[in-house]
Image (tube, rainbow, N blue to C red):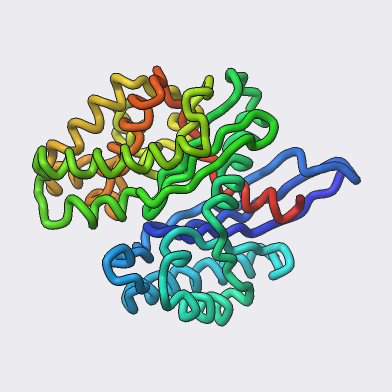
Amino acid sequence: MTTTRTAAVDCGTNSIRLLIADLTRPDGAPAATSRDVDRRMTIVRLGQGVDRTGRLAPEALERTFAACREYAELIRSHGVGPERTRFVATSASRDAENRDDFVRGVVDILGVEPEVVTGDEEAQLSFTGATRGLTAAGVRLEQPYLVVDIGGGSTEFVLGDDTVRAARSVDVGCVRLTERHFAGADPVTPGQIAAARADIERALDLAAERVPLDQARTLVGLAGSVTTVAALALGLTEYDSARIHHSRISLDQVREVTGGLLAADHRQRAALPVIHPGRVDVIGAGALVLLALMERTGAAEVVVSEHDILDGIAWSIVR
């Protein structure tokens, strides 16, 4: 058996996350099992204002670099070299005019160049992370899966079984939608919700041009918006990853949670202990994306996964 320690970094529009993992495989075979050494997340809101200005804000870059400095120390302390470290950057840095400033800063701190991946590659990594986790846990679900990764700036849709059949990334995410439609509202108005919902429906139309959404037999939901909705639906008093991972949340539960989030003001959402402070202002928009997708596809439930693009990045290092 061969065990390889890897470090994966996923830098999105709202958060930056680190996974240090030991991947074990039979000699000469693909990696078979994964053990978390360290997994953490920091809200940095790198995508602050990108949809409006087309540029990464100086304060957003500094928040991100501060997190990178913390992660660099952790990666070194766990003995992972740059050859086993991969840093993937997604929607916000992909869209920004000044992304070279971001790239230079990351290289200076971590010694690896951030890969600003395409939406399609982001979708592939998300699918790999989610479905390998299902298989390793012995979870048996009907295929094909529709894996949906609701991020801050974009949402990825991937249909597949053992391999990816079709994928599409669209520019709706919890941060982007909030800045477009909910800015300054507390709580949001029915008109603002309708405008955001229309934006999501247009994005679903785009996704459906490439991904046959109605062919899915199991919907798998990833990322913070989905896991937070699950935590609320489960009635948790504190965030419990073990309870959330592979939970099944019904359409009625998603509808109830989403309605409650959109009706609440900032103070009321902030009082809910399972919502990370960095998600309080954007969780309503993220939940609305999930609800719109479930209603569009007729999905009776969503299977929630804590394993996502971050795990896919780790697997890609030893692929």
